Image (cartoon, rainbow, N blue to C red; front, side, top):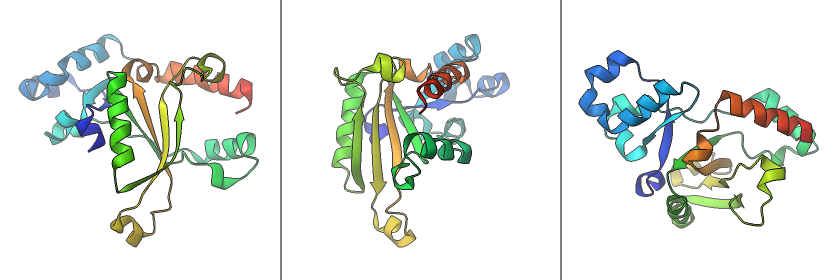
Length: 193
């Protein structure tokens, strides 16, 4: 519901020509993104959650966040957390992308008011005091650690599992491609993080 109300976007994968031509009317709202993706094959394209949930053929193209790899989890535990597993909070993560900072603020407000969620920590990389240049190569987002505390989660025993949700502007999300990630990994490794 957060992404729905706050105009959240999610990355989509490549849409083959035959699929878009067969469903031109259905895909018309994401045509600009698909065209952008074809003209810039390394740049991600996005779809509004409100549009994706109306049509399964659109929703199936969303690229959901991946679980952190075991190798990276161990590396982070050794480099950053002195083997304290309780500090590794981004194993399960998802980004929600926005066209405007006001939409990030709206989503953050919705999350904070959500009775099914317990927010444990917020890292605001938009804060003017955050040194984005030296700490994250200029990258900015709002990063939340939270738990889902619904009765169903309690019954399943997963209400203590901590997830990471990243709220970021589309311009930063477009930099999260393979080349951008390689630059980030090199920067992170140079810093020993």
